[in-house]
Image 1 (cartoon, one colour):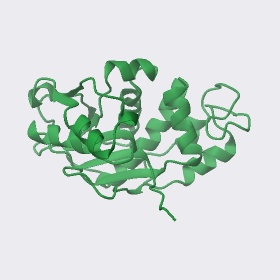
Image 2 (cartoon, helix red, strand yellow; image 1 turned 90 degrees about the vertical axis):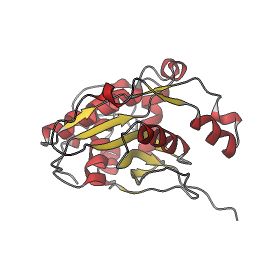
Image 3 (cartoon, rainbow, N blue to C red; image 1 turned 45 degrees about the vertical axis):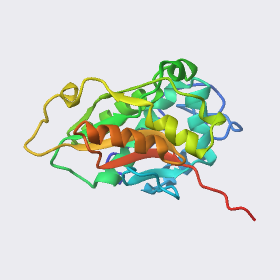
Amino acid sequence: MRGVGGLWADLTDLVLPAECAGCRERPATRHGFCPGCVAALEALRPRPARPTPAPPGLPPCVALGPYAGPLREALLAYKERGRHGLARPLGGLLAEVVAEALGSGPAREVLLVPVPDTAAAARARYGDHLGRLARHAAARLRRAGWPVRVVRPLRALPRPDSVTLDSAGRARAAEAAFRPRAGPAAVGPPRGASRPAVVVLDDIVTTGVTLAAVSRVLTASGLSPSVAAVLAATERRRRL
């Protein structure tokens, strides 16, 4: 869905560092991207993304594209190199994923729930990177007429570095990593007659264990997610 569009305006809005965030080779024109990477990002279309095997509790998941090319480089620049100016265009892209996942023009309210970071992760990633993306995504959707709120009903607990864990260990760590802040009442009353559509947001989906763990805690709190929306999905390589 390009009805929440205006991506080119976002990608060519502000003059930022000379190196393109998408390819790191050509000079950026505006907002951190060269014209070639803008075209590559605009060509991406949201599609279902489901890890195999899918962990229990994982809701339907939609991703903008594979974790590769300009999208991968842009996420690394944003998260690992502190390119905060990329939050607006990446948030706009995430809004398109949400719109595609839910369908156009929902009558009911939409609650965007970004996966919470631990305090240590936020410090390492130059702040609450998903919170910034969620705010920009919500602003884009509101301009398109969607009734959207960003809510933070969960908190993240310290957990081991996933690099040191196998798949079973990552699943156990994710299961124990999230707790409700103060129950569903912290979200506030729904703004409409029907139950809101709850969308879990993340930047990348790999095994799905984090999204599944967040979704299970939300469901237990009375906020069952309708879908998960992410920017990128890793693609498992087959062994030859």
